[in-house]
Image 1 (cartoon, rainbow, N blue to C red):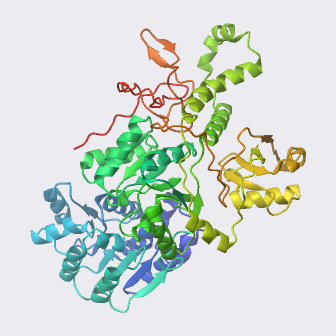
Image 2: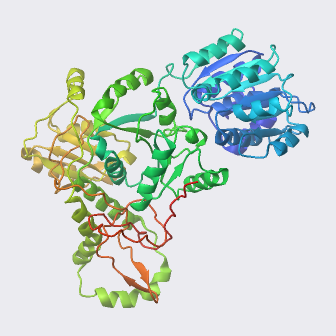
Image 3: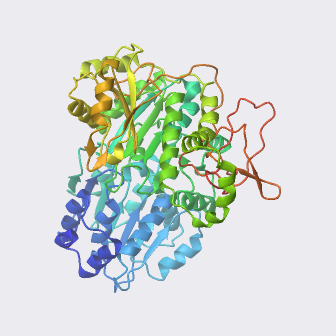
Length: 628
């Protein structure tokens, strides 16, 4: 039995629920829908972004609308045009079996005349941004004096964007006897003031702890020098080959600049901010949803309309001016029950903000160190090996195999593997040998870790580092994997350290005295029918260690601009269909698709790491976004 049937929804709405594939209501839906259907009441619902708030107010408002009355009966206000369009589309999907219900979106950047015409034809529900709605009221193009329901979605964000006066003016135009439903992630003073002024004895529901962060999102921060912020961003991306992320900047200018740098360095990236036209924004979002863009660099305002469930990471390139905004940013990941990671890149002067955010979201941050160059090389190589293994063979290649076999016939299997992997490894390590460690150490944070009992270790330089073929896809994080290893190997609390969990594999350290036991025991263990494979890693995990297992060790050396993302075995077409190897290009395998062609190198830029071209192909490079 579908649990939505227990909430009191009509047959037509339940049919739409079935079509949409909804099975179990989220917590906010379970709490809000029965209350809103049962009686006419004002409501304040505090819930994080991505918890299903649209359905929580969408289903009740559709069921309460009189489809035979063509007058406007409900107004929904949302902070941005993207979110406005998203809500409109969802309501249309919910009401697909409700005859006669029309939903119209009202937002800036589109023809106000056409929007007014659509409302005049009959719009029982209007979804609007505050600025455009106020404009239509001023021009006499809309009548909301008889509405029964007013819904404020993302109320805190609307007020944070400066819409307080517009919202007050709009609500003053509506009848006193209407029901007002206010949905918000946090409850700052201005939101409370709106509630007090325009709501009567509202029912309050809270999902989780008031103002808290989502339980499906983990929070990390990396402490770096200010000049290394961009380099840190690239290393974080390189250490997570399958990253699919939103990168937040404070200003439109920084957003555009960071996106352009990423594109120039071969990453699949784009900017999303208010200076783009609606067509440009729509194009960027279409590419992002299709995963053609894997690093979307955005301002807080522009990102309000992002509704993509499979975002793996949110990266705070800069912290927001208003600490409460962090909650909205982190809510872009960990949606629909999936796990996500919110990362903050901070300098020492910003450390105090981390503590402030922790108090608001009621969750602790893990301090991590920027991955060393050799760690990144190892991660990328193992990711490449996994990708080769999982690649489906197109048998059209069979016609070319005799010629290929003739070229490679003198190579043994081991030699062939070494040469294939070296295409990636040689160029990648050549870049990272020139790069220094970016991490700085937070003494203040270490003192707090000591108080909290987080384990620490002095660098003795003699530890053995291992690679093991289990990771987050096996439902491990660093803590649970550490516990599993200690229990399986029968080792003490501090005998397993520097545990670093990736999707399909992990790293960990022990003292050398345990090496024989680790290799013997783990290589004879099966996990859910799959044999565990452990190998000694050439990376000893040197340098400092934080409590979550990250190593801050690196090669040392001078600074350069960072490796451009490139796929291994990425031949470039030349002339009459021939291929050449680009020996001076540092490859980057792992998840970022760049597009056809490559921009010319700048004069005197020999230290710049090379561009990334497509692995096993040559699809076109993304064009750099224009400045408007």
